[in-house]
Length: 177
Image 1: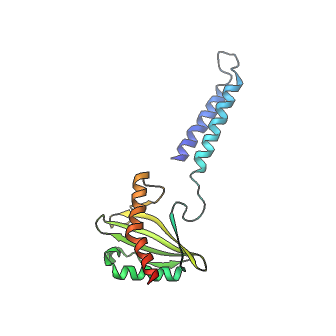
Image 2: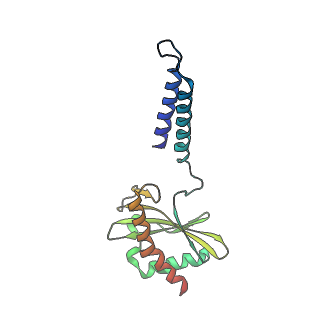
Image 3: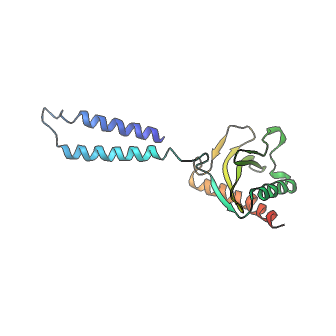
C-alpha cells in the first residue's frame, strides 16, 4: 500500500511540473508548485520508507527474558509437555527446531483454532529474546498474519496479551522451577 501512495505522489509531482507553463500561455507562480512538489516528495519518501524495516523479523513483539536460550527452550519443552492443548497437532507438521540464530517454536490455541509462531534467540550470556512473530487462523497453513503489521491496533494488543497470559507468563514459571 505504501508503494501505491509513493506512486500516486510521484504522478502528482510530475503532473504539476508538466502543468507549470500551461496556464493560458502565462507562467504560473513558481512557489506554490515548488512547495507542493516538495511536500509530495517528502510524503512519498516517508511512506515508502515505512515499507522497509531492518532485520529478518522487523515486526515481531519482543520480550526480554533473564535466562539463557538453552534454559528457555527447555522451559518451553516442559510447558508443552504439561500443557498438551498448546501443542500444534501432529497432522500440521510444524516442528520446533533451531535454524541459525533462532529456535523456532509453535503453539496452538484450540478454542480459537489458531497457530502461534514465535522464536527464541540468545542476546548475551544470561539473557534471551522470546519473540511473538505471527498467527495463523486455522490449521491450514498460509493464513499467517504478522504481529505489529497485519492486525489492526485493538486485535494486535489482544493477540499480544493473549500470548503473554497463556504462554509467556506460564513459561516464565518453568524457568524458576
